[in-house]
Image (cartoon, rainbow, N blue to C red; front, side, top):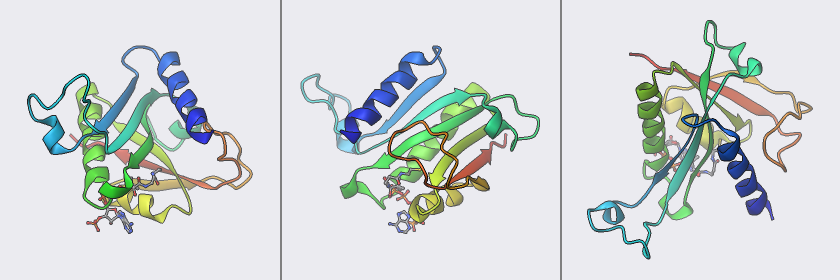
Length: 159
Ligand SMILES: CC(C)(COP(=O)(O)OP(=O)(O)OC[C@H]1O[C@@H](n2cnc3c(N)ncnc32)[C@H](O)[C@@H]1OP(=O)(O)O)[C@@H](O)C(=O)NCCC(=O)NCCS
């Protein structure tokens, strides 16, 4: 049920986004990505993914002086069997390549305050915590997430 709701939310995000504003990055095992490894009937297995959407929301922009937009990262996940092998870090590098190519200066994301694993991943990748939401702040994009404190983290791209 939750899976279906999340998929529905992602599809809505994609469908409601203007062209060039929503991206999805996936990680596939190296063998699958070799030339000839991709057969239509045998698609590469996805072992990690992350979503990007270009946003201009004031509740984030107020923490980024002088910026008019930012890339918002969400849905970061790595398959259980592939965790702790650098895939999360690799996906974040992919995010940065995309952001640089688009000439965007800031990347923002939110992570649950209790999710120390993900926070460490982001900190190591250069993201800084700028704000923690109150438990009662209920504005949220996904169902089932109300009432949890979320940390807003931001990374400024350097040229
Ligand atoms: C968070 C997540 C994406 C990390 O992916 P990953 O591919 O395992 O991350 P990496 O291997 O690149 O790890 C980078 C660093 O993060 C930290 N880290 C990752 N997993 C950790 C763990 N289980 N315990 C402690 N630190 C951990 C480490 O510092 C690690 O560096 P190191 O291995 O050199 O010590 C993955 O654990 C996941 O899918 N979690 C569930 C979904 C989730 O919480 N998503 C984040 C939503 S905001």
